[in-house]
Length: 275
Image 1: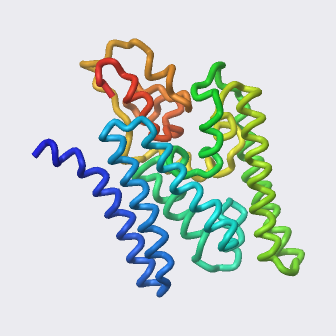
Image 2: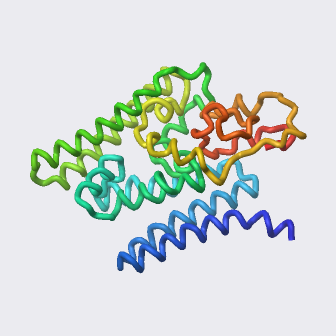
Image 3: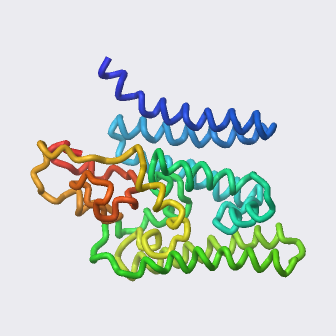
């Protein structure tokens, strides 16, 4: 029974996404949503299964399966702007489609369940940045997190300006904004990774999506917790955490607690299985 129980989590995650898939398929009368969320659910569940089986590249498998799907298939082939600009665009048009659904599920309400798991397993920007050499921050965190609020506001102002100016071919503009925006994100991410010796510097200081993720992640159901009876305060979990989270503190107010991406590096490196 215990052997079977440990596989309940990937099954539960699959059922959550499958429920979303079926509900959207029936309510929107569009079979694309059945395929889209079923595919993402299977990918995430597979990654969790591989993690349980102790496959060291489990998270990378999910990153590539989901990240490349969203970047190349949804973004380039289907020409859907899945960046934050796309969210503002669909929101202003009053259409609950594509980016608005994606943000509602993954970045606004989803974090109530899985926190910033999106950043750890599905973000196509982080998918590339995580292949860079600075997997754990080599220097203390900088106090420049305010930049993400500037990029958040800039994206809103950009799309607002398009609507206020009644720009023509706005869908084409949004497609090019997706391509150019991604190129700028990757360039900034790579430069910052080498400048700060931290693969996740872009996520910490610049990414506008973090503005959505932060408040809901505070109440996340899925959290890494520390068994104080087992913990020997060796500090290994803090050293390997890419987001500088203090995993030995179980309170919701723990240092950088809303930035945990559920990468499980702390769990894998804990010598006493306290996490």
